[in-house]
Image 1 (cartoon, rainbow, N blue to C red):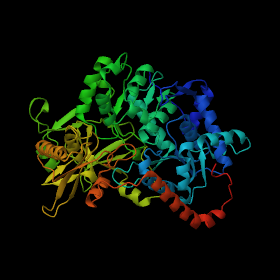
Image 2: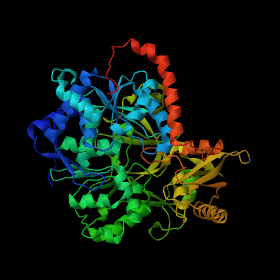
Image 3: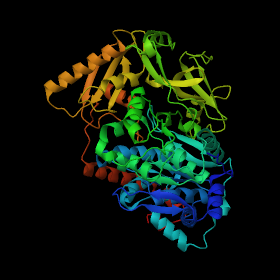
Length: 612
């Protein structure tokens, strides 16, 4: 398979080059949620739509270097709007659209914080979300215009005399994206990424996967998240590949759509978090797999959340009869602060699983290979290799004092390379926290090296210290969710201060649909028994809660810190007001803020159509 490369120092240069040299070549294939006919767009179509958006933004007064927020679902509008913002010399800020109406206040508060920090001057959205978006307008002083994506493009097509994109053509060192982190361990922060950061990361990924012109990307991942946006679409754009895309909700409703798309379009590159592979195992029936062929899938990347060894084994075994090759499953590691990717495995070979003795790892942070046949001791801990740094990047592991640790000793993971963020947008304090004196960047994750491979053990902030042991919550959660009637992926484990022991108490919060008190008591006892048996430490509290109680980020990661705070405050299951009450409250608050800021707005150039 011949290697493939690309030229260009900015995303704008690359888009124009693709459209100029291969305008008719298909790039986007968008699968609708309702299962109707797919929508296709070539590189030429993408550039044409992007240029219309760029002219529309300029006509509305958006200047080079200003930030423009995107609140759009997976659609052609997202792709053309994102590219159009870049053509206008502005900086796109993707934010996720609202999903649940009963959490509208929480959503509005979160997005208000992001928009204020980003100093967004415009918000591009869809008709269905414009009413909500309008409630944000008075709360964000910088926000001058809220506009539907289709209307913005229409305005651009009419505004033939608007300044062209060339006036704001970016350079490699200009910001290309502000990627707000998921907030799994705290408030979301805006990761600044330049064109040079993104292109360096994409080139390195392409080198490892040995990308070729025959590759086809398939993705249902959200476009407001780095894996979907950078790892899938921008990767496909840079290498001139077709990408088959559909919405995350379509996948969640019918996981078989992912495998169907891979089979129908001969997909070769397709990443997903671990939970997606688990969902396929649980929700796809044998009869759904008739005429499915997964033999073209050569990189089934698994990342963005803890990777479970059993998922790798079960997925490979289940789908092997349909052409899936075990060596195609590739556990990877990355973070927004390095664009998207940091470590990848090699192209050849099945995933590597390391089993280590529990006692020395939990008490001394030493990853001692487990004894017994294949390291299969029932008390052994299992970790998955996520490979080695992608070309041009380096990692090191250090102890709490910043000193390097040897192989098979757990430490904090730090990195450096051409994709490392210049810092968090308008947040020098947070930037200083992740920078070391000698120029490395802290990830906040822990792990160890073995034979050069990196094994992730967990987040530093999530570590539970109990009875002299270092307990990683992911292991506790994996054991608890194996209990029948406990919802998978909906368990959070964390530590709380203990006045009795001077260390921490272990708390497990688990979702269940069961309401009968006797059944719930039996479930809690079974969770306690299994966790105690597996990790040799009994939970001090097991709290069973209704579905959708355990807080998560927009990308599906557990917010353990927030769950812990709710537990300590006695608000684990907060009472949510009816949607109409939340909207009324938001409207009232927005009106008050509007009256206070009206004088400030009157000083700006009037824009009678800013609510169009």
